[in-house]
Image 1 (cartoon, rainbow, N blue to C red):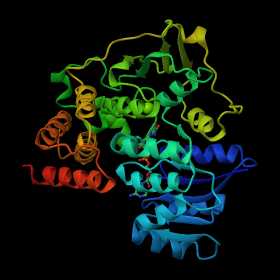
Image 2 (image 1 turned 30 degrees about the vertical axis):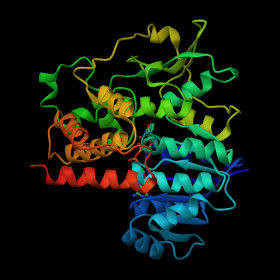
Image 3 (image 1 turned 120 degrees about the vertical axis):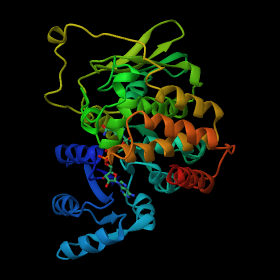
Image 4 (image 1 turned 60 degrees about the vertical axis):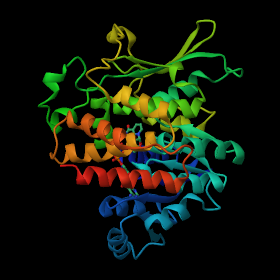
Amino acid sequence: MKKITILGSTGSIGTQTLEVVREYSDDLKVIALAANSQVDLMEAQIREFKPKYVCMCDENAAKELKAHVADTDTVILSGMDGLMEISSLDEIDTVVTAIVGMIGIRPTIAAIEAGKNIALANKETLVTAGHIIMPLARKKNVSILPVDSEHSAIFQSLQGQPNNRIDKILLTASGGPFRGKKREELADMTVADALNHPNWSMGRKITIDSATLCNKGLEVIEAKWLFNVELDMIHVLLQPQSIIHSGVQFVDGAVVAQLGVPDMKLPIQYALFYPDRRPMRDNRIDFAALAQITFEEPDYETFKGLNLAKKASTVGGTMPTVFNAANEKAVALFLAEKIKFLEIYDIIEECMGAHKAIDNPTVDEILDAEAECYEYIAKRT
Ligand code: NAD
Ligand code: MG
């Protein structure tokens, strides 16, 4: 029986993780759940999965939830202290980090310090603090098992390849809802247009990131840390059908990749049961019906997210934090219809231009860089 904590259990990855738990309830037990503020859904999750602890980051939501579930045995915690506590409980084996944003950094570090394996969906943690997380995981001998579909595919492709003879990582991208569009056409794209992803159903923030290719930019940085490769060894390739989830080209030219229908439950399940594979239903590729899998180079000039992320990673230090924080805030402003789609890139570029990177930052320095970036955007007219 594997005992788990799920950070972000009310979100897209969180709820799909709970679907896997439901399917394999003899092998997986939820000990703790965390979310920000969705009281009703969390109450339903408490009644179904009977966790010992639940943390609501929002204090008011925690109070409200406490009143709702007073008849249960679940202990309700709140805030960052609560997140840290449920990430390092003695009785858990694995923490699923399905929270969105840099709020994931401290709980992830607490979990690794306590020797827990990490099923990692929260890419912002590695993007901003990869230099802290990866060495710590090695030191504590814990596994970071990727949940992001591309990184899971790369990880699966590397199984049975002990000598790390990687020539290139092939990181695939669907291209998002705006693939093929030019800059003029992007200017007036609405929130609804950007949320209309052709293949994947995901949280709102990551769906906008798919439209800007900032998601792929974050994933390039995530891959650099996870697989310990140089940036120029990561080749992004558009694969609009989202069937090839990513792969590895080895030094002899052999390419090993993982294919499948787009369904996050497979990478979630693989991370939870690694190195085992468990049956999944209704997810077989019908190759004949699919007929073709096509490829394109990304349009780097129109979709600047990818190159901005690479630039941030090349500068290093706190610059990836600024890329990430500026993007997070810009996406929130776009979702609130306060800025236009292309201004997301303007805001990231301005913030990166204004920032002087600190090398090898501590967690506090990372969070300070995030706060400074938010202030800069708030003052921007
Ligand atoms: P989502 O918006 O659907 O859910 C986010 C979850 O985080 C919610 O449960 C929310 O309550 C919780 N949360 C947000 N702020 C919080 C806070 N301050 N304290 C506690 N909990 C908080 O997001 P998602 O799409 O599930 O994505 C989660 C993470 O996984 C992101 O880092 C994303 O990049 C990554 N990811 C998602 C997918 C996907 O298919 N959705 C794929 C790959 C990677
Ligand atoms: Mg992905």
